Length: 215
Image (tube, rainbow, N blue to C red; front, top):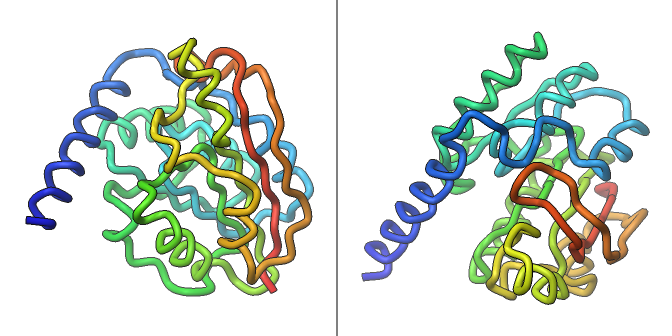
């Protein structure tokens, strides 16, 4: 029964994201996330992993700076849009379709992992972060921006603000300190900001930001 439930849930989420991305415009815009862009500017290009990368705006930006980019998402429409954006910007990215559990990345492969609004079911969050952390080499960096638990005050009144309505999928500082206890956290804070990232990240939001280096 558990396997059937997981399969149904996965199918529902795939259908949701395929429907969202199946339109001409880029629903989160074509420009990279500001926090990701700022943190990436301080790093020497290497190999980067972009989980839940959607339409590819951040992956394409990183590739344009000389990063070797691996990305994945469960949406085939997301991949289609990402590859179109890469072609438009004359860069190459490696993009796979599937969930994290489907991926076969090697431990210690990446100089950076970027989690830009990558939200996981509460029951899998800790295990997923542990797995993603294993892909980072010693001295490698994790860059994260996500919606904080306080974001419910915004997307409950403005659906265009985006983000999960399930508090368990959102983050707080204590949670991230636990997930990244094997890292030196150089920056971790929550803030309110006005997002202007396409039609579905549009308005005031409560976000949490982290940059950490693996010991």
